[in-house]
Length: 226
Ligand SMILES: Nc1ncnc2c1ncn2[C@@H]1O[C@H](COP(=O)(O)OP(=O)(O)OP(=O)(O)O)[C@@H](O)[C@H]1O
Image (cartoon, rainbow, N blue to C red; front, side, top):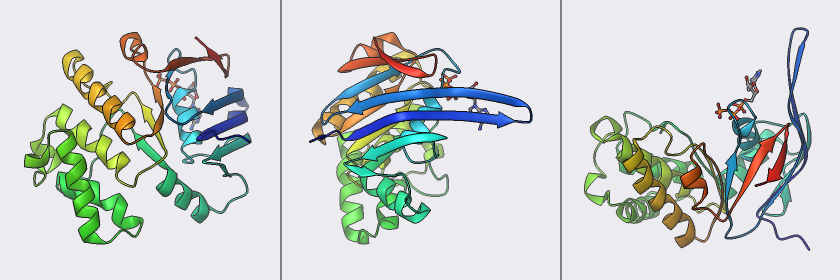
């Protein structure tokens, strides 16, 4: 039996533009087990974001299989993939992508309401999570009134709002100064452990990679242990 939270097998991704063919991913094999927090490293342009988008069911691979929580995402309709993403996966980007016209609280409620969670329960869960990152008192503020670190904290708890099994993050603190990045990253790790998730996190920062369970590196289109 394979109880991986996320399994990628034989993942290939080729981008074609005109005569040009770019083989970015050339047969990625990867398993993420419950409780693991794995750093994804590699030079710029190596394919980390491409891989995270494929693992997050935001893009389809040219070939290969993505299995999330034991459910294979191949041959599923867009609707089914969206359902699987909403229930199993959380995504954090380098830039917060919060909805500017909504408050912090509403930003954390939105994905829950899309998933059909009743409003009162969505509000309660959002407040619980905002409180965990010290933002309960700022719940009514719009993103523009929050600092960069606070905005990113809201983006992180928004990704956790639906209780995903796996968190995928692409340079989640890459846009913050070193000290704030360090603090926010510590809170992210704490939340991931507290919520019992596993995570795959792309980073260029070796100090952050060292705080995770293990590191994998993109090398010539494949993942190798580091
Ligand atoms: N939609 C696309 N069409 C064509 N080429 C693409 C597309 N998306 C990504 N690429 C190319 O694929 C390669 C990998 O890009 P990707 O963003 O995955 O790298 P990365 O490792 O995340 O880089 P960085 O660390 O700079 O964020 C790059 O050469 C990029 O130009």
